[in-house]
Length: 138
Image (cartoon, rainbow, N blue to C red; front, side, top):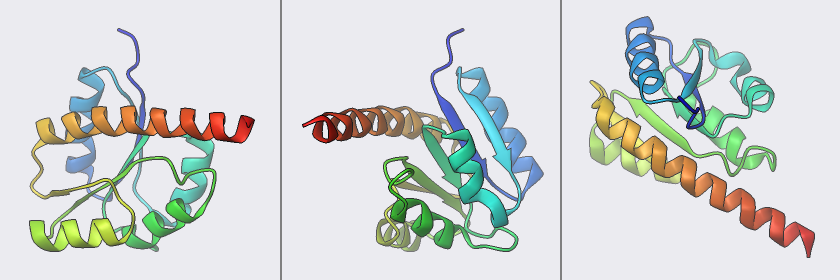
C-alpha cells in the first residue's frame, strides 16, 4: 500500500499512542510517536511530518507551547497541527484556534474523525506548501 503521508503523534499515554498508531497505519499512514514534549519541535524538524497530532499534557513542555513554537518557525508553520486532549469541545476548539491549530479532538477519541481530519489536513498542508513555493519562486 502506498504511504498516504507521515504523521507525528506527541502523546504521553501508551494506550492512546497504540490506538492512534494502529488505526492510522491500517489506513496507510506512516506514524512516528513521541512521549516527551521536551524535544518535539526538533523531532518535527527531523521527521518533517505532513501532520501532527498533539496532546496538551506532555512531560516537560505543554502541547500549547509546542503548537506555538511550530507555528512560529517558518520551516514548520504550514504543518497542520491537531490537538487531542481531555477538554470540553468548546474550550478545546477555542484554545486550538488561538494557538493556530487546525482541529481539536476530545478524549476519549473518535479515531474515524481523526483519520478523516488528518487526510484533509494533509491535503491542505500540501496545497499551502505548493503555493508557498510558487510565491517564493516569483
